[in-house]
Length: 124
Image (cartoon, rainbow, N blue to C red; front, side, top):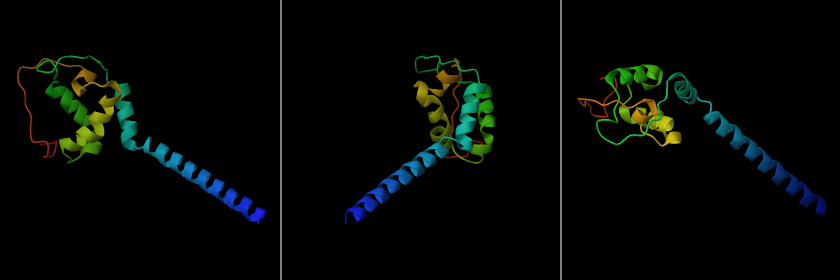
């Protein structure tokens, strides 16, 4: 009876350890996806301004910077929409700094504002 209880306790302990290891391995795999690696490379490769500024025409980026950014993540974006770009690339890049994307890479004052429907492919 006591031996059965010890074996059951041992089995439960092994089960918990196995579950914890599987969880840690799965969590770690999420940290090393190709997208995560590319975002890390971006933060190292691009000169970060980390410049807080007021909302409005001063918190913008040039079309050239936007094109360079889209080219950098082109293999992930493909025909996807801006909703994908924002949730999978922009927000994870800016979240640790609590800045907008423009503030992250260097805001630029603009004369003209151009936008598009976010549901369309970014390439259009």
